[in-house]
Image (cartoon, rainbow, N blue to C red; front, side):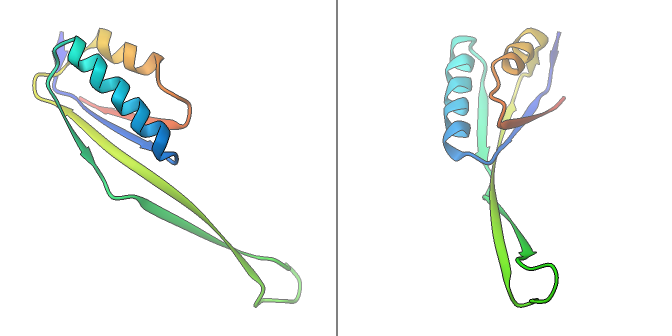
Amino acid sequence: MTFRTQLTLRSYSKEILSLYINYLKITFLKLDINSSIFNFPKRRKVITLLKSPHVNKKAKEQFEIKYFKTSISFKKGLSLKVVKNILVNKPKCISLKIKM
């Protein structure tokens, strides 16, 4: 059974995301699955906290988190066996969203 599928990968580590995408490319080539990859622009989330909670309002500290996002779409679709293989070998720092 096949479905029209789109995978969205999101991570805070660009290196791990690119390694996992290369792994997926090799897997899709072995299984003869046509896919197209689209990279989204990176997103930044800035958090500002007060250093001193009591008096000094001017003393602030900023933290930043960068997120990298990639989308992979398939023309024919994926079987459930391939989707299970993708989910088993996924690193923990990558979030995966599957849209069928």
